[in-house]
Length: 200
Image (cartoon, rainbow, N blue to C red):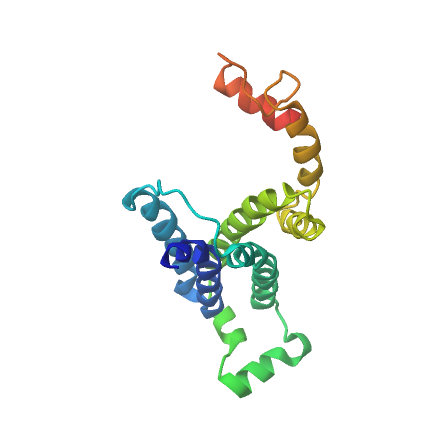
C-alpha cells in the first residue's frame, strides 16, 4: 500500500500551498518553494520507478484524480476570498471570532508581489491539476462522469474545448501530417512549436 502514497502528492501539495497562502505575507513564497522542492528536486533525487504496477486499489487511484476538481474549486474560492477588499457575507467576522484568524490584517501585511507569487503558485496547481488530470480523464470516453470531471478541470485553465479537439481530432489524426501536434521526422523544433501552437 505504501506504493500508492505517491499518488497523494498533488492533493497534499495543494492543501499545503493553500494553507501557506491563507497565512499571507512571506508565507506566499512557501507555495512556490514546496512546488519546486517536491516536484523538481524529487524528480532529480528519487530513482525512476520501473516496477510493473498491479491494478489493485483502483478506487483509491481514481479518488485521487476525482479530488482534483474540488481542490481546484477550493483554491479558487480561498484565493478569491483572500484578496477580496471587504468582508463577504460576514465570513471574516466569523473567522476572527471563532478562530482568531484576521484575514483583513493578513491582507494588509501582504505586498502586491507576494500576492503575485501566490497567484503563480495557484497557477501551477491549476496546470498540474486542471490540465494534466483533466486531460487524462477526458480520455475515458467510456465514463461520462470522468469526462465531465475532466472538462470542468480543463475549464479552470480556460481550455474546456481541449477535451473535444484532443480526443476526437488529435487522436483521429495522430501521427499523420494532418495532426499539428505530431512532429514530422526531421521537422525543425521551432517550426513545430509554432505549428502546434497555432494549429492546435
